[in-house]
Amino acid sequence: MSDTGRQSFTDKASSAMKPDSQKSTTEHVGDMFKGKTDSAASSMQPQSEKSTSQQMGDAFSSNSNETQPSLTQKAKNAMGLGNSA
Image 1 (cartoon, helix red, strand yellow):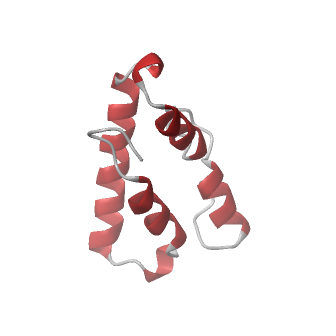
Image 2 (cartoon, helix red, strand yellow):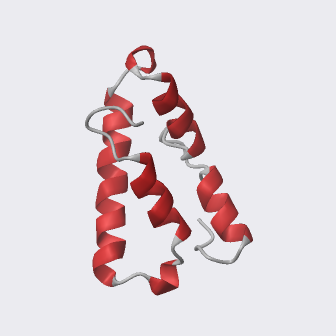
């Protein structure tokens, strides 16, 4: 379960598993907006105040604001479903 004010893990997973080629422009914009706001929320919340599940979710989605791709993005890239970010 994600912390209050954060994007749910289910939403993240469903968005990540749908190939970019099958997403509408609205979905792309929505994903980008949700990702940016969730990343900002992650940055503003101290690690000590995050639940264990949120810390694990942030690690999985690489929501630590580093320039490296997330595990999800690496998996999508390996399957040819994402861009090479």
